[in-house]
Every structure is written in C-alpha cells, then in structure tokens.
Image 1: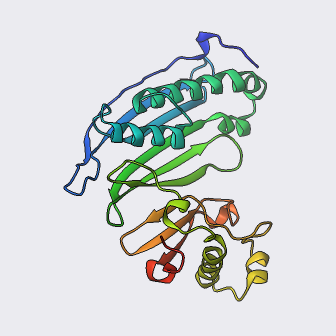
Image 2: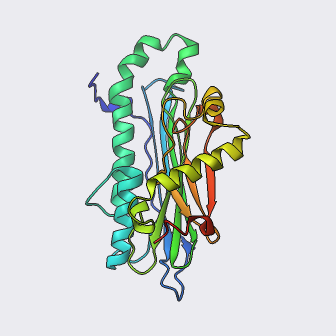
Length: 263
C-alpha cells in the first residue's frame, strides 16, 4: 500500500499563470489574478493506464505583500485546499503534489489486482478540479465563489460550490455571526424551512422527509452563503439536506425579511 516507485509516475506537468480577473475599485474591493496548477500522474507504467489529474484555477488576491491580500489568500488556501502558512501558489502546488502522490501510493496496489477487469478500470480514473471567481455582492462585500468537481471512484463524481464573503476594507471572510445578532438561529432556520417548503411545493416537514429532504436532520443555516445585492442565498451541497440526485440546493431570503435578526 505504500509503494512509491517513481516508475509509476510517467506524466507530470505543473504550470503557474496569472491573469487579470477582477480589478480593485474605489470602494476598496480587492483585485484578483488567477493561479493555475495542472498535474497528471499515471497509476502504472503501462500504456493507457488510468490517471489522476488535478486542475486548479484559483482566483488570488493581488499584491501578497499587502496584509489584506494575505488575509484573503490565507482564507482561500485553508478553505479550498486545507493548507496553512503558505502563499496561495505554494498551497496549490502542494495540494496537487500531495493529491497525486497519495493516489499512486494508495491505489496502485489495488489496480494491479483489478487491471484485467475492464469494468473496474474506470474506478481508477481520478480527477480533482477547482475553478473560482470573485464578483461584487452587497455593498462593501466581494463574493468569492469556487466550484469543486472531483471523482474518486464509486458510482459518480461530486460537484460542490464553496462561497466566501469578503469584507472589502479588512479582507476578513464574514461568518454568520458577523451578519446576524446573537440567537439568530431559531428565526433563520424557520425562514429557511419555509423557503424549502415553497421551493419543493411540499406541505410540511413530514412530506419533505418522505421525499428525501432533511431525512435524518433538522434544518440549519450553512456558513456557505452569498451576500448578494438584494438577498442572502444559502448554498447546500449534495447530501447536506437532500439526496445526491437533488444536486446543489439554493435558498434565497430577502434582506427585508431578516431585519429582526440582521446586525
């Protein structure tokens, strides 16, 4: 299980590129460029062997010597790549190296056992892709959105959307506690439950659960939310409040309906 022979890796390419994506403005919104990393490895030295590919296109705040940009990029690296203490380029590079290295280490031995079964070959064709962008949201806020698509064997891949709301003045990524008053949970969860009922045309919680929503859990407000110009939208990825087949679920609430709990 820990075979690290270099002969198993036959194709590797890492590139970094920067291009303008979102320029700063008079309201202090940060400017972004794109960090791109691409790497592929084969699981064995055989011709046409399954591969693991990593493609990262991550919006990075410009001027990493600036404290605000450092704070933004540090939050992005931790949230998207689970990396700390590195620049965003270093974190992306490290992630690609680690992910592909672990793929070969963990799955090459299993592949040797399954290599003659054509139905199992597709299980080893891994990929991990991230794309991201930054756009203006509520006044004083930049909305950073990342789409993650990966396949690690099994019946299907996973698609996720991760959102961060950045304070343009400080670079801080806002959490629910930053925008709602203490004790907001009860009111907010009730409004989200009602939004889900309306979205699904369900009569009550019982019907929702019979249809696979909130099957083994209660409604909750995720930290995955968009502070848009007219409303706040909560993003639920697959399996969070419904089955995989329902995909990503968005529940939008108007700011006017949240005045009692809004800071």
